Image (cartoon, rainbow, N blue to C red; front, side):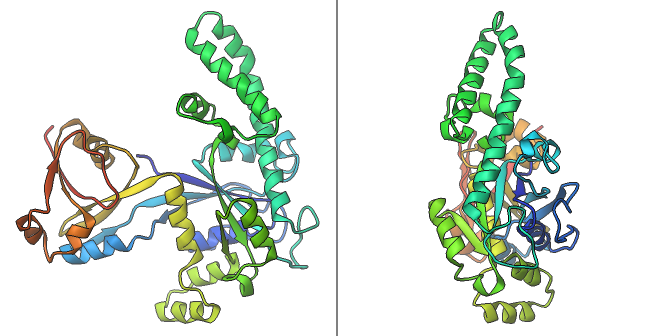
Length: 362
């Protein structure tokens, strides 16, 4: 499975690049106080925190630990009218088309030294501006496809179905509803082929001042209610400070001063992972302990193919140990002696936390 991409979007000066810096533990993304300072999308691959991997590696005596990863793309600040070319316009809308999930960063803080492109602080309106720009861009994209699809539909039955979906999507968008509101099992394949912005999964980050990083504020609480309690509250500035600390004791002390029990970034990365319905399986040995990402519902041969295509082609069996069983014993020999290791065939659907040895022959 290819690595999943998450696009970090927002209006200018909401803290996107500061959050990106924290996520990547780097200062590679410019975080200046003016719109459009991020000209090309910054891209970084980030490890998914998972304590299970370290526990498994300790039991197996693994020399090397390799986490699974996700990719974050820091995209320049959008403004009202972006779908018509305002600000940096369509160039950046095209970057968003390439991601699997959109992370909206919403400004929930007052700061006279940091300008707001709309001249006020209102995260709900900010989200509505961004969503509207995405829907307008989707309408334009679909309308460009209609003439070609109409011509193809005269001779191709498949094109008739695609045209029908495209026309219904234009109606939905024109009524002010995102594409995601009408996606279902029957039309999802066609809709996904259009790469529409408003069809993507969404995450919301409320960026607050340092003193409000745990409790949030009225802005974040109102916004959280608006998105049915699905947003994350954090201070991008605090998270960047934490990420830049190399001394673990200093980091622990710093977090205690703000009452932070778990990094907001860790919560965001885990939620980003879960939002796309991803699960993790492990391959464990003396040389290396490794985590692998797959979509929930994938069978054993396809999971094997994530490691190497030959594993899927020549798949014979999967030797599977559940995570809880693995950590309950001192070694794999004891696990097998207790009958906790089992052989699974082609139809086996992988479960989160499976420790697997694939048997194959090419």
